Length: 168
Image 1 (cartoon, helix red, strand yellow):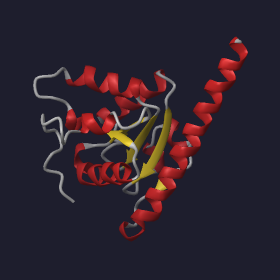
Image 2: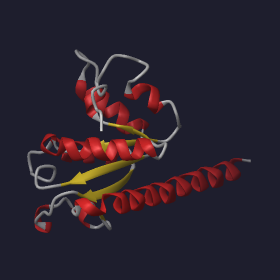
Image 3: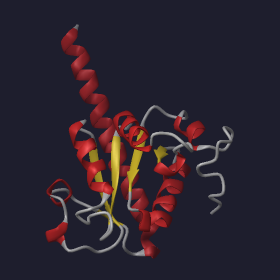
Image 4: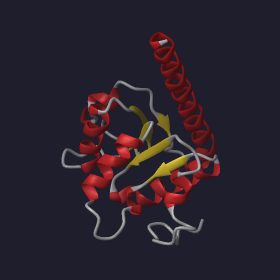
């Protein structure tokens, strides 16, 4: 995989152009230590024509927390990469989880590295996780993620449709 254009200001190769490919945006929350996995997950979503966002596309000198808040708000779903690093009490991922919950975003937990379940935030612990721990099963797990995203998006579209029907 070639990730040389990630975070680039070159508009023809940047994440920004891909985000405009579809109206649904998937925010990937991950710990810095899990960056290589997050990039692989991002690439997998991109290959399935899904718009995804990682914080590595934040422009230099931008207010990074504001950028993250805005992208979470713009997203239809948050994919939370579960690992010992992302679930640590001092992890910024938990702040991203708070923001997502405050915006009532769909949270899709993906297990990258085994964790002590006692240390996992209850908003993640109560959901069925998509297991990515076996590297050889990455493609199957990615297909499971796409299925979950599709189910979530179908729910959102139906919810919107029903809401519009009630206003007529």
